Structures are given as structure tokens and as C-alpha cells.
Length: 164
Ligand SMILES: [Zn+2]
Image (cartoon, rainbow, N blue to C red):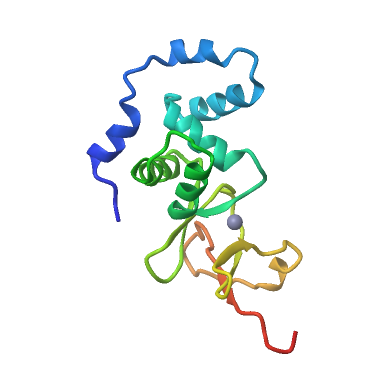
């Protein structure tokens, strides 16, 4: 569902100055890193965005849904409502910090790895994860005949077979 402008505005209208907030970082290297990431994406570092950054970019590459992040935020007592998580994910995607991965059905996945790569989707566990790079050269792309290939989105849906 596309975010309405007023939902995005709610995330950005903290009424706080970025400069004042920056002083609060002190020598906390994680907060400074998250703030730098937001600045590079031309986003002001509101408490909500910093909280979302901490969920998304603290570990290695992640594949998440808005529902997964909302549960994590709630479990960690972060100042994020479900609506803010959804608006923030769309905003981060628009700013190039995340890549949206569309599967069949209503669930939208967000990938912190924005580079070109392929995915497996485990239908039983409902998990999206990167295809090992060693497998990727096995896929031969057809010539686009007069067109440039902008991106290739490949999702291989898998299910554990009963012989294992
Ligand atoms: Zn990925």
C-alpha cells in the first residue's frame, strides 16, 4: 500500500533540530554512524529514523518485512509505531538505503543490500535470503536485443524436500 504524504510527514516532523540532536551523540560511534548514513541519504536524523537504522543496519545484510521490524521495535522498547516503521521503510527505499523485493502476495520485503543480487525464498519458513554467489554464474541471461538490462530480479522459491 503506498504511503500517504501525511504519513511520511509524521516521521519527519519531529520538531527537533538535527544540530541539537547531533550534540546528544557524544562519542557514541554507532549513533554517529547511523546519523552519517542518514545524512548521506539527505535525511534528517529524527529519533524514529535513528531507531529504524539501528534495527536495519547494525548487523550484516538483512531481509525484513514491516511486521518483523515492528515486532523487534516493540520487543526492544524502541520509539517506533507500526505506522512509523512502514513509512520509514518506504522513505529509506526512496532514498536508496533499502531495496524493495516484491514476492507474490501482499507482503513486501526490504533488503539492506541494495546491489544487484538474487534470492531464495523458503516458503515453509517464510524467509527471504541471498543466493550464494557461487550459484549465480549458472544463470545465463538472454540478450535483451536493443535494450539495456537495468536490473535482474530473480527469486527462487524453495521448500525443504521430504527426503532430508
Ligand atoms: Zn538480498
